[in-house]
Image (cartoon, rainbow, N blue to C red; front, top):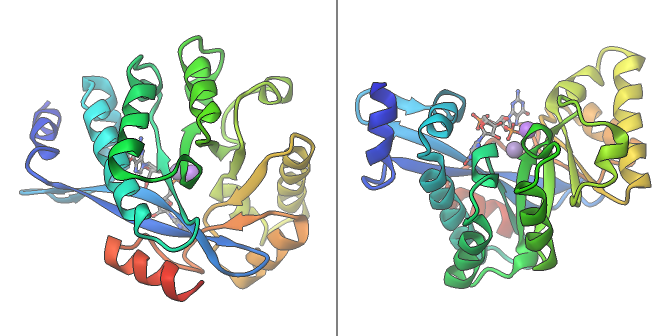
Length: 249
Ligand code: G
Ligand code: G
Ligand code: MN
Ligand code: NA
């Protein structure tokens, strides 16, 4: 369709912008990294959200170019952040099927000079379930020191048995569970179960969509390590996230 064709030119003509949402160490309150979130500044339609164009990009294959562009921008920016602050970059299912992915990621680290331990790649459960291309690729990336996060955890279908065998380092708890913390003890019990599971599997936990100090306190009480959400900061432009990670550290 029309949007799909426009997207072909979007990368080349500089219409994609990357915003960064700070990620906070819940124990200290200090930022330790930021998630890269792409926006498309379409010349006629204005700002198009990723949910409205990533699925199209996946269908047409443009996602490989879009994804690499976002990755390279994010690694360049993160290189200028203080300490070991890391960039957390979303990868789509189709990128994980690309046999050139590992070489492309390592090439970006090489060009930007970002050390591998300062890059996290976020993938969804459904993108890796029983996959013969994705799993070896993730294993190779991890062997190079890049960390892998499962995004939107709890919304997919992978069994616990399966999860224990996945090559991952971090679980991101979906914001629907964080929102439930306010309401019912059941909402809290699910989040507590996910955090215990992560502890057993030796995974770091990140909670998304934290909007209130009460949610942050409850997550910290449950043992969650890291948080992101409007309580701390919305997704910020590159100069603003640099300022944030520099001055809140
Ligand atoms: O920023 P926003 O809330 O609109 O993001 C919506 C969704 O789009 C999120 O689930 C996020 O994971 C996804 N997304 C944002 N940026 C990227 C990207 O660069 N690549 C991929 N594959 N998904 C992204
Ligand atoms: O699925 P993913 O987690 O990658 O998407 C992150 C998206 O969630 C971003 O587009 C961001 O704008 C949005 N977001 C970030 N923080 C909050 C929050 O505290 N509340 C809500 N409702 N959305 C958030
Ligand atoms: Mn994400
Ligand atoms: Na998410």
